[in-house]
Image: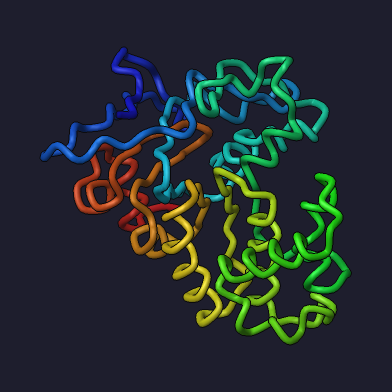
Amino acid sequence: MTKISEETQETRTGGLTSKPVVERKEKQKKAEVNNVMQVDDLNLWYGSNQALYEINMDIPEKRVTAIIGPSGCGKSTFIKTLNRMVEMVPIVKTSGSIKYRDQNIFNGDFKQEYLRTKVGMVFQSPNPFPKSVYDNVAYGPRVHGIKKKEVLDEIVEKSLKDAAIWDELKDRLDANAYGLSGGQQQRVCIARALAVEPDVILMDEPTSSLDPISTSKVEELVQELKKKYSIIIVTHNMQQAARISDKTAFFLNGELVEFAETDDLFQNPQDKRTEDYITGRFG
């Protein structure tokens, strides 16, 4: 079970200090859930500016973990750290550890290419390549050396089916992905991520630019995907987090304030800052 340090620590919030919440024990013992990633004492700086403070959380396998919090609280920075994409900014430095399947991803011998294959990413706005639907989905497998058309055909079909868009696009595989609707583009991007057989899927506000119907389709897709994948989703929409996630983490000013089962966090928050945020008093 994930715990936030029980030792007394000060947290920064508007210049005041307060105590972080220790994740409460579940009232009834639930089935054991394996963790796909463990974050221990993670700190992150952009140059001299600290963006994340002592983050500790265990990310459960084949469940949906939502990250919520106001703009600028560190949500996107945090998930981009999980596959080290944040390091594309040259002034970034970190301390602490993130373990994927018990291996510290910050170790020098842990290859970034392998990490980003196993921990895939879907971005806020759909970002298909200016290529056909087929070539978008086949891109990753080709990079990994798969050249046989019959194998690529199978991967493309399976990935589009897993992304719940095969029936819409099976007769349009040669069409440029730019000609699709925003919701279709986002599901093609999800299919592209699935094509390299990831273990974890990071989603950074994947529905923020979509209409309500497309948003609903992506939310339904997330519920199906968690049967095979572990999903971490950043969302500014608290109702969305309540609808689709199993666990929710509330971030504020670069700190993890509270992390619990989603129903518990929304119905019985243990930190006043969490309660104030989910009731709309700020954020």
